[in-house]
Image (cartoon, rainbow, N blue to C red; front, side, top):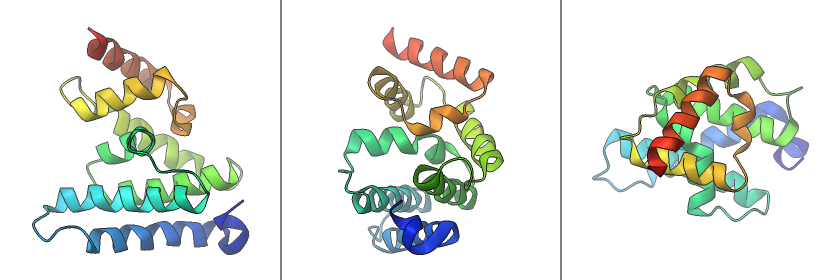
Length: 154
């Protein structure tokens, strides 16, 4: 149970937020707010993986962060990522399923074939072990992901 055995669900959420803030503070001074946000999400999720003894590889972190990186509101993205950490640690009975489903589907639906990073990450994620967030996708989002993957493969 990792973090949850030590801190509980709220402790896990708070630890993710603290990791995010620390990573944002360490971002290069020349970073735009969006770039600093990306650094923050990477730092928070990468730290969580490392805490669990999982190597935070670029491919894995990118695939896991896709829907959160695509959310336009930074606070909502961070809240959703923190909740995703609770889900990965404790499952559906503890995490806020409605929040995760709504935010993950919203983030995925913003991806276009022109958004190269997200499209490539989706394709890579589907070719091996898909990220855990795919369980939250509704039918419309699953179809959208499939269209993006097909467009990238062309």
